[in-house]
Length: 555
Image (cartoon, rainbow, N blue to C red; front, side, top):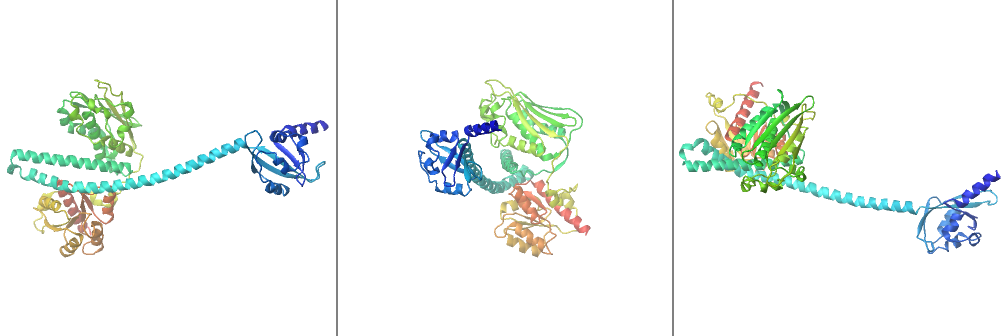
């Protein structure tokens, strides 16, 4: 037992923790070696002294009264104290105390434990500083996100307004040129007629650019809507290759298609798949030298996926650009080296095609990437775009438009103007246009006035009066009207017994998805985007009127 006592005393003496034993008046009756080293004193200099006298040996004094009071009351627990030592760096200590009752030779004494936590405190301070810095960064990030959200909303609003403002004059340009092309070929000089055809093609190109910008916006906002159906991927690819064949032939480029397997059924949006193939093949032709081949292939990985590749022998793409080429408005930087005709080569393209391809592919549950050895002087390593599409789509489709308006998806075969003309026993249907754009209504009227009677209102209020007085067969109106807007007009017409069953189609250049949804939510049966073709307008009008007739029969 005596040996154990000596061992314990030795451990206490040399443990790397300071131990002091104080009487109730704070006189020091015991210290271990750690305390002596800490304060650079000998035992004879400290035993019998008070805690306040010991503190006086520090380089920088501090008020010991609160500490002494807490020690004597037994309340010192995890008390942090900074000590300024003579000739040494400052340290941070952690103090703890507990009472020693009736233990000889220290009855009613207090044990004070001192532990050096300088490193731990420095680490804690560093973590705290990092947390503060992180909090500032999070605050800055939140502010930046709010600003980006605001910018995104402003961009969306701008695009909505810009598309409306661009599409409205395009309606007139396209409409009048199509009327001349369809009905006045013999009345115009050949040179003049060719100019008009050029105007019509230019209007189509501009309309395509506007639609591409809107598509990119929908993709960025995660709102690219799809209307899925069972389609044949191989047939769509061949159709695109055939359609672009004439463009390729002008430069001696051959488009080859290679289809492996007999079945290529896919559940997806046909229009978007056409857009995907068209953009990729267009790019392949654009970046290829004259006389080179472009290859499009589909391979089926049984039980796994479709693997689509579009390969060219063009200028190639630097590896540093393999990811950025899918960003909006990005075009390959080495295009100026195109050997065929760099001026002609750089003369077209908005840098939106591949970003739209990526959005369409990912929306269908697939992925797209490019392989190319990069660009080298006077060489044409070519590029290969790879697309993976699942054999069976596992994503949920959200084509709510089909639920909103049955007339949009219920196809009535054989509907045409002639069907309307054969109904000689009935009065001619009356179409009411509510649109402040006189040129748009004039073009639309010219297209259908041989079969329908036309009424025109340039404001919402005027349109309401005409609708209640004449009970038209169909109402076509713009959503952006002076005074009462189109959505409010539509809700008013739907709320009244005499007009609630009149088919209503919005007739607008605002083609943003939220604008279309807002129109259907207000009670519309369909939506016609400006600019429109004459055949599209006729088909929409006929379908709406036939749907109305069917509804009346089955009532």
